[in-house]
Amino acid sequence: MLTYLKNEDGAALKHCADAALYEFRVYRMSDLMKTLNDKQCLRRCALIVCLILIPFFLYSFYWYQTSGRLSLLLLILLLATLMLALLIPFGLKALDSPKASITSYAAVLSFFAIIFVFIFPPLTVADEDHHFAATYWMASCALGEGSWNDSRTLQMRPEDESLLFEETAPMISESSYRRVLDNAELFSSNDELIAVDITGDFYLSVAGDNFVARIPSIIGVVIARILNLGAYPLFYLGRIIPALAFVVCCVLAVKITPVAKGAFIVASLLPMTLNLASSYSYDCGIISLSFLFLACAMKGIFGQDNLAKIDLVLLGVTAVLLAPCKVIYSLEFILLFFIPNKKFPSKKIALAFKGCVLLCAMSFIALLRMATLTSLAAGTNSLYSAGGTSVSLVYLLQHPVQTGILFIRTMIELGDFYFMSAIGSSLGWLQGDLSAPTYFILGYILCAVYSVQATADDTAVISFRTKFLYTLIVCGILFASMLALLLNWTSIDSTVIQGVQGRYILPAMPLIFMLFRFKEGRVSCSVIPFSFTCMYILNAFYLVQFFARALLLVA
Image 1 (cartoon, rainbow, N blue to C red):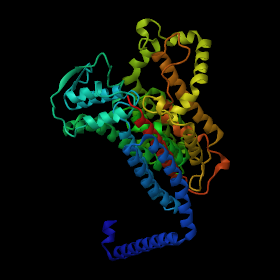
Image 2 (cartoon, rainbow, N blue to C red):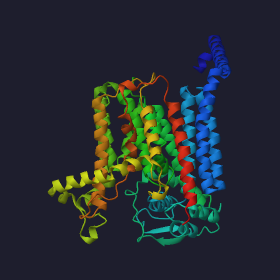
Image 3 (cartoon, rainbow, N blue to C red):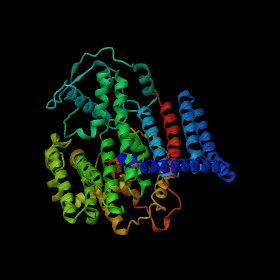
Image 4 (cartoon, helix red, strand yellow):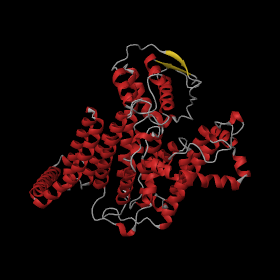
């Protein structure tokens, strides 16, 4: 092409292209000026801003009067400023173009990911003490300061040991933020390592702690160690890198999927998703890989064009990496067999690709997870195995009626908790005194239902048979997680299955939202700007009440 442009015809062609680009820019500028001069459009924009900002300020004023903290006021002003910057383009319909909408979504998701990184003090996310210890151990091994075969001893700096075992508490309160401010130092004053015996606190392994899902957080800790950052800067950098990796994966997923982009947007901006994505939890990596896999599968099933090589590579890689992280999400691979063979270069290639991906995924599971699965089925890996009260798979098969009743009773008594916590009613260690009101959960659900409806650019019909398949996948994931925790975390005399949480279905949340797509629910405009704008507003209200309540607690 460059050679062609060197001749006269090429120069003429380049001149025409430049002229066309100039005309396009002039058109866009004139179109923008026309919009700004449209009084009706400006009135609509002013109405939207007033209808949102006035209730937000009233709601925020109540919480500020209740807490009286300057830090809350700063958060309110930051949220309101960015909300105003988002509402004006939304009201003027300046976010309707695909590029503008994706860029704005990426900015909104990045903003909330960083906010959630810092609004949760260290080790206040569920099981984050274990996840931080595992990440630190793997980072030390990567730096040559530990052994991949020995996780009984951690080579740590004294201040990092103090952060892990002494300076932090799992519950969020005003004291949690005070400890961060009192102890945070940019650089470490003592980089000598001490051997810390953790056998009584954690059991760590490369396979069990999902090395692949932890790579971003490991990179963050490694960088912090190389720069000799202090304990708290190290901790937060280990959160920031996976949060940004999560943003990249979600933005790619939204760009890839040809159907229900709003499902991925809403699922990525749920409070519980952001809570996990901005922590050391390996759920961050699992959710990221799952969203990418689902988006690629949706492109294969609903897309108009054949799958390109890059699509096949991404589909295969995400499946193979996701499989050993948590085996229960391998149920999503059923979607591979619903991709029409005509989307591949040939039927033979289609069958070979699907079989190869499935074989590689199962091989990774057998290599990294078979020992865990075997011990789990036998009941030897249970929390209660030492006391002789653990549940084994054989026992469950011998008592099918009691097992069925146990599953049903668990869903009846705890089903609402699973549903509410999956959205984000309780974050961190499911701290009850920071729970969000029910109307927040209702708002997120209504936003999700609207966001998954068909549009002019997304006319795909999700049939009843397809929705039934999605339901089976989600129910299978929930059942498998309940079975795993029944074998690993529940005593034989328990009346319900212990340890199950709604966050376990987050990787499949886009499929759940797609169940609410109806033929009669088609909307006339793009739902992408509405989705992330509405989610921004909901999360802004959510964060104000969450932070205010946290500041009122003194541990």
